[in-house]
Image 1 (cartoon, one colour):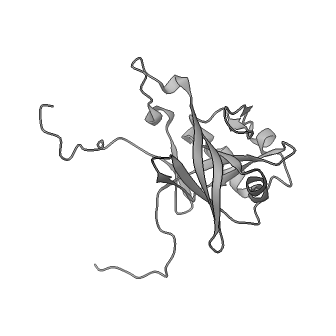
Image 2 (spheres, rainbow, N blue to C red):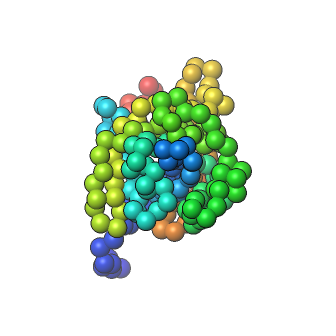
Length: 189
């Protein structure tokens, strides 16, 4: 069996399925599901999300320069999908999904309380790439749910059962197959 050629496209899967919270200058908040999200830099901590300009939250992020990337869990899958297919101009997604707003520590945009990790972001720049515009942002605060902390103050995101998106479907991550550096770790250490 050989390889089959597809037209060039986005086949970089799986991706995190995140909920991005945004608010306009008057404080009206909205949620949008984003799968085009990724880590960009460690120092300073930065990430990117890509959003279509016609999406309701797009103008909120552009005008305030702030947003929160809320990691999601298997338990949140229905809400994640709903927030990706419904528009905030037509409905209140917070109310419809039962997700709870919580106050952020560094930005004026609310967090999703049910999220195990909330990344508070300030916009650095916007790159208008085509169908999507990429928001490059610095992470100015990170909020984690204490129920995933152990007695040694280590965070265990895997206990939250993170949600992933792959080619139109949502998945849990499954079992851990290794850790960073396990392939070269000396036996007995």
